[in-house]
Amino acid sequence: MSWKRGLPLVAVASAFLVAMTATPAKAVFNPIGTEPTAPYAQPVDAAVPKRGCATTIADPKSPGSSIPAVQVIYAWHDGNGNNYATYVEKIAKIMDRIDWLLDNSTNYDQHVNFSCRTGFDTSTYNGYAQALVVPEKIEAGNLSGETGLGTIVADLAAAGYNDSPNRIYLVFEDFDGTATATEVGCTVSPCVASTDDWDSGTAGHELMHSMGAEHTYITEVPNATYGNDIMISQYNDWQWDQDFNTYYDPSELSATFYIDQYQGIGEPSPDYRKDNLADHPILTAPVCCDTGYNSDLLTAQERTIEANAPWSSPTGFSLSGAGWFQVTAPGPESGVSARYYDGRRSLTVNVQSHAEGVVSVTRKPSVTPGTRYRFFSRLTTNTSGSVKLRLSWYNSSNTPLSTNDSSTFALDSVWREYSVSAVAPAGAATVQISVVSPSGQNFAYFLDSLQLNQCTNGVTSDGCRLPHP
Ligand SMILES: [Zn+2]
Image 1 (tube, rainbow, N blue to C red):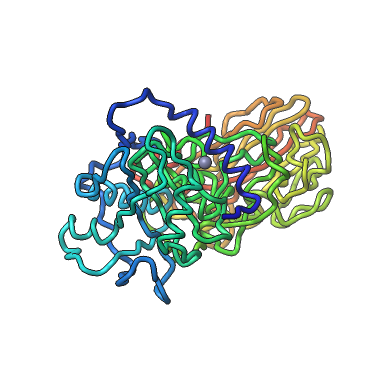
Image 2 (spheres, rainbow, N blue to C red):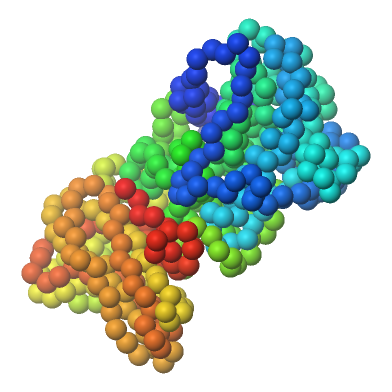
């Protein structure tokens, strides 16, 4: 078996996970994990929709020309025995939850393709579970200690489960194993993700590594991970890509994101590959719009200014009043999102004192009167100064109707998230989002990670995603 550059990176991830999941030795191995409950509690088992089989084939080792899909495997060895009958419905329910958490992360309808085998009555849950989950004995498993992923990969390949990229093999280990994946974004076969900690957060996280997602590094701060996401805190959080700007953007499939912008511990180099999981072949095409936790009305360029080079004038943004702006110039790795020129740009806004300065996204997204909207952005400064965020409402003739300003925020040297929300007034057709520097100041600030929620999720108090801490 050979692994490409993903190995050291995933090995670090694996060590991290193992350290976080260390549990006392048990007489009998218990793989059942705890479901993540943020940003809100998942439904009880009976209320989780049955995803069902997206494709059904006679031999799960030979997917042939069937659509790309996940093949679920129950792996066992003589150390803990074969408990397939006990666990098969539990594993199917976790898979249904993985599909649920994808669909409910955003206001897009999107689902995972599951591969099933023929020979079972899938109208019953037990028959569906048996069609979905294939048992495989790992003969070379370590009966008295941890069985590594390499042993499982070798076993699957020898058994004939070796048809990637048509299949990603998601392995539920019924023994002391690892929560890991062969690669971030599989380029070798078999493409395998595994977990000995059975819940939708951990299993989903490892599957998403195989699909091409890295841990969520905050875009502005080199090597800082970002907490509110299944790709870093899968024990707490089930939601995908809270900012639509790290690995998943169902609203713009042509938008891609650097999956890892910085040279992390144990990694040979920054990973400049670009990806967008919303376009992955094991998923159905995303369809707007249903009810989901998170939404965004901006384009990728409006969120992260990634299309423009340092020093240039930013496409899609405009400035009025006092001051001038440019795409942030190269600089130190702290503060300015400029360490590697990898597309994770920010704007530098130079504030002048003689008047208010207003930086806006030029395009005005459409809005519905009576619906709440929330504009988020991250802002910082190397000195000190104050800004506020603004929503400006326009009617269908592009005539200004009214504005809603946030309070005035005193910026500091940390990239913090700020936001403002308001209900679109009667007659509103569009909204413009702006960052406003009150007059009388001379300083520079940095602006990045914009997002505009349509607050209709039905699960948080104001219908918008939760603010980041
Ligand atoms: Zn991981």
